Image 1 (cartoon, one colour):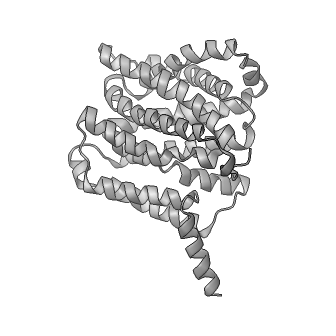
Image 2 (cartoon, helix red, strand yellow; image 1 turned 120 degrees about the vertical axis):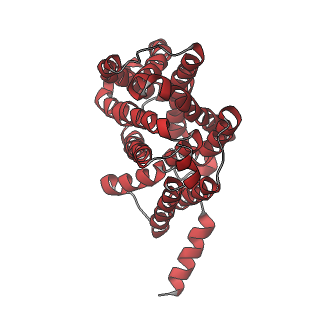
Image 3 (spheres, helix red, strand yellow; image 1 turned 180 degrees about the vertical axis):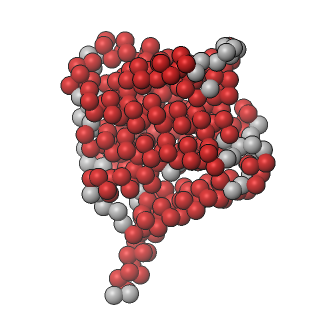
Length: 309
């Protein structure tokens, strides 16, 4: 299915997109709860292992294991770039960043997806997209230097750098899935990614395990993070890429921060600052320009560009 043929996309996929965004909004809240108690690497190992326990039997029962075997090398690369490494860096960032800020940082993924697609796959990158990236990164600067967040211990340069590095890897993984694995089921990609991530991180997780195991609510957050926000959510995400195309599926970027800020405010009493609102608007406006979700602005830019010739 062509990514541009949005007219033929059934409405149910947009409903699934909304559900996915809500679920991923919770993932940043769970990270914020569990990372300080478990440490980044042990937390991520528990996250991918709990997701794998559910997804691996499903993969065998539904006959998708052969798809993983046929595409194992690419799925291993996707697993490393979309789970093993970026999950750890986001968990590290969660030590010094609120759930809402984490989700806004995560919204920069389309910028890196577009840049990597342009560099490695010669995807078209319009002037509007470049302007959108510049605007979005201005929003990131606003977020990083939010005085209220810094004073509350909810922002640091290391946390911001960790989150942005994870987003670069997400951008690479999205391009790989869209370009090389579009015909492979989301279940096979998700299960393979969880498996390789669990195997890679296991020795480090044993070394970095916490001295005192957390209480039951923290474990509940980790299991929800692994089973629902990772295993089932990524399977749904890859399904949406196959049916909608990556450019449509990435619209979760707009919705996840809204849900994450809402959940963080309701369940963790996280404050919503003026800098967060301003930075979030700049980032999401930049995402809209980069992904071509603002056609009116695109037409206006072409109009004035034509008049100037």
